[in-house]
Image 1: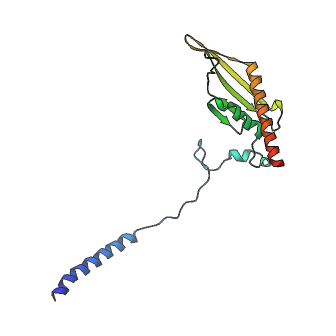
Image 2: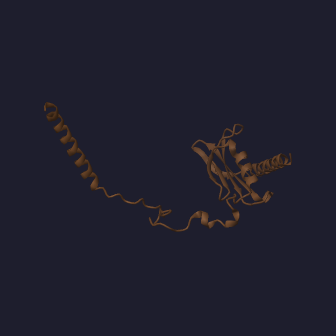
Image 3: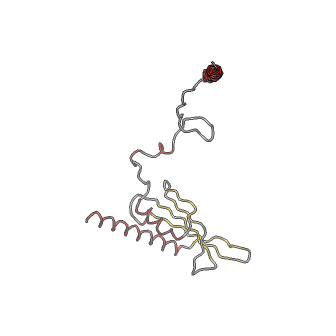
Length: 172
């Protein structure tokens, strides 16, 4: 009898705890998972609109909109300077200001435009901006046409090397 007296409160306590647990679960109202509504406009906060990828013509099929050899060559040639902005879609590479070792009183900034889909000299355009050090900091910005032509030639030469190496790899 003593054994039964001690078990009864434990069974009652278990039954009350189970009833409270089940009562707490009955108030749950699970909501269905909301589906993604798509991209949201940063201007209006509404869904929908046109994606940038939809504006690109479907015949490109995910390829670069510029000549891939010139693009890669331009990145190779400008790799010695820290990059500021790279726009693959627009074919633009902009570097930060950089001081050359052989010209300590000057710094340059490169802007490269890959403007064609063919490997031709008119498909690449380089702009080299130069600033000279003055007592007040850096002077006005000038362009260096001779250095621009050299950079364009280096990019074209590098693109031809990349093309030649890829052709020799496929021929083997």
